[in-house]
Length: 440
Image 1 (spheres, rainbow, N blue to C red):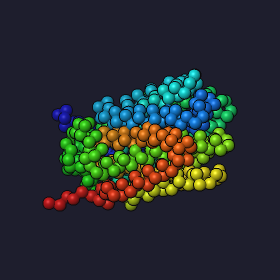
Image 2: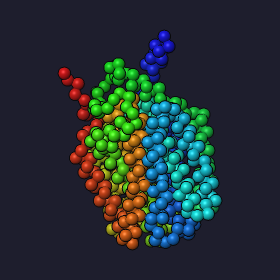
Image 3: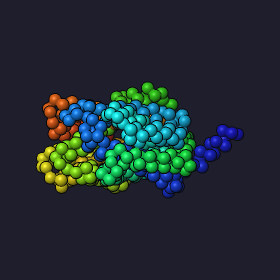
């Protein structure tokens, strides 16, 4: 009887944005706050690494160290978060992520050296790995398959608008109150607010994933059947999902490598752009605007580009986005005018908007609900490892060439090649456009 009662409760859970609107909106607020937390370290800290935190001029590898640390930690914690969320629940992992963020503003305020900034960024990586993963996974739990593009578009829209706003606001706060105190006030306010909202209003969504899995198992799911990988068990181990995502399924492998390489762009804009612009006499506030335009276009356009993929599929927007990003980055060193840099940032941001939510949506399309949390976590592991690998390679390229411009050309080429790999290896994943063969 208890099992029957549990099955009845699962059957009563409805999927869809409208049916779960209050929780959907709470999760959008959460990812906005996650974006604010990330954004507070993206303008002021790199630009003032030399004058405020003692990084010697021309020390490209040392400058990149905090992004390398962030990338490797966030990548690993994405992997852990996906698996933990299937055991402990999405809300518990979200709360843990915010708890790890509490020391960050204090470490920035009292940092005696750049090593403290690197350590603070390690905690930021834990925070981002847990929190951003859970806002994404929780929304996918409660929405329908035909809303995944829109769901992930709105998720990334909210998060990266938060990143952009934080970059601009902290630029002004640093000018008015000093970099350390400006970042401290901003960080403490955002993180404590997020903790309270999570504890009081966010609900656990794991039951919705269980309900979806039960419907698939019973054959009562509606709509086109996704092309789930066939060479994996119903309840796979972590190693099985990792192998599937990394090399056993060529679609998943192509998506994972694209996620890794596109983070080269974000590492470039996080570290190289502020230093590149500041060295050319651009004010801290205007550096914030150039970087902010990238974030605003990236975030704002995802409201449209995620929904677009629900209509035309995931593969074309991903490939177009990779190549458009390549063009936007290549534009940056061609001319030295603020308006040109803003246009370059906008083109790059729109390319990111085309590819970013749709890579995650493509992974979700062909991940079974029983192991979707793990699949998304492993995809995000490879994707955010791109921060670390990208920053390390950028530092090496800049160190060997003696300038930052070579890093721009390196990233532009990497994005073009990665887009070609997706075009070559990855079929369309949208179940309505390319459904599984259900014939006899």
